[in-house]
Image (cartoon, rainbow, N blue to C red):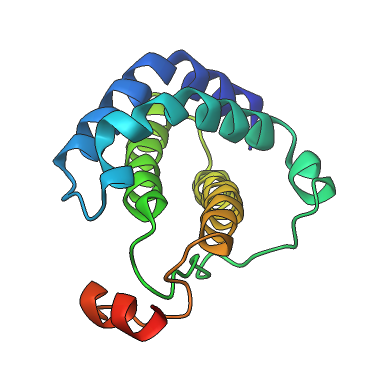
Length: 158
């Protein structure tokens, strides 16, 4: 991503954080760990990760990540992972911030604009996949399908 766009996104960081939190609070809460008060403290750390990766894309690939295409999404077998809603809200907030930064860069070439959006998507997907998979790795419901009633899980595994 071009440095002027990275700088414009960094300048919007307080607004991005505020919007991310607002979007997160608007999401339905599926589990106690998914409560916004339990997740908002992660936003600053995640923004640090995002800005580090977009400023230096090679760091993302050196940090143990494989290259992802823009259509790969992290999966959660049980659907209870609170980071699913967290990263969906963050993705929306970052997309909106990038679009606003691009609007304020009238000389931006359309190819560069699209490449910046793709790069941001790769960064977001890399970070969200890493964190969602780590959380799913310790989930007691990871072998259950989506929508499996908790009662059947506890009686089956008890």
